Length: 225
Image (cartoon, rainbow, N blue to C red; front, side, top):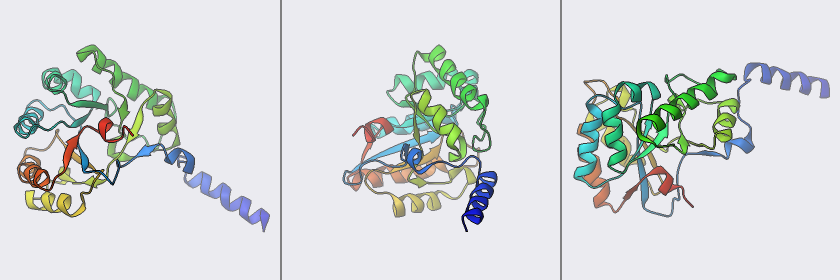
């Protein structure tokens, strides 16, 4: 029986070499304090040459601060909307340099993706992120340890709008309103396809959530406790 158990465990390790231990999983943050009415808007994959500005204009309209997980390569291409994001008081998170999926690798590539993004962010705006989100939310033990060694907290989300699939604005609204609660981290994208309905949906969602008494904060403010 012991021999069988050992063989079974070995097979699992071969099949899932990048799984995350239960102890390290505790360091992955998906939400804040459920007892509060604070929630965090997050936007992935930017900056975009004009979509990011459209999102920023909308957030300004409602006096909302959000968190933007930026791709280093896009920061190098479009520094102006990135610098405006910081100037308006929004939080910046690291989202790797090339938006590579990190769950299937366990080498220096992970650290380099994170390091290059940190460098271009600091070079462009003198800002060093304290939070990190792996592309597609995919990660393994090595990615988590790399983020921790670089003093970055790994942030996922509570509500996935899947706006990148270009669903209707109403579908996005329904997904958010059906699942949002105190402490939620909401996932949107500011680097989006021209036919995406993210902005249209946000125009409906933001006043609805404010009316319900939710308070928008950055991710770091949400998890500061």
